[in-house]
Length: 143
View 1 (cartoon, rainbow, N blue to C red):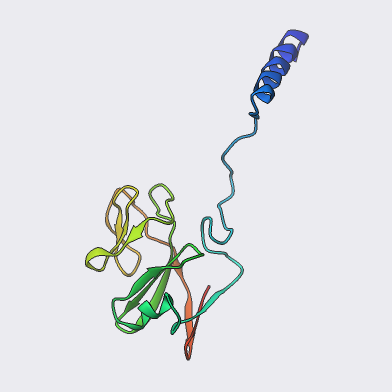
View 2: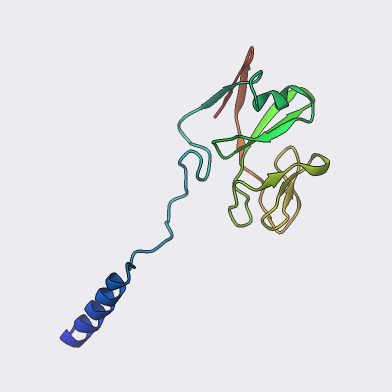
């Protein structure tokens, strides 16, 4: 880099710093895997008691919920619990879900997924991430 190019870049960085901005990118090559902010944690399990609020909604067939602090969709289908990552495969929305007519609907852009996580209406084109679920009495473990 020659002196002129260096001074040009240094001046731009100084001007940005003056306004409180940086040259650092807002995006990352890594997926978000921290609890409550993106995908469900890959290495740690999430455990809850199905008799406690709000999880007691899962005791009834057709009951569903978006985990209050993790990005996990849960549903009771035929007495069996299923869990999916709540990151929509269209644009990555995680917290704006409803369950009309027994389908998960991402309200960011209208993508719909069945209770197996498969796309039933786009714009999403890939299924939701399925998570393992185990039940021991009233204790449910996801992941």
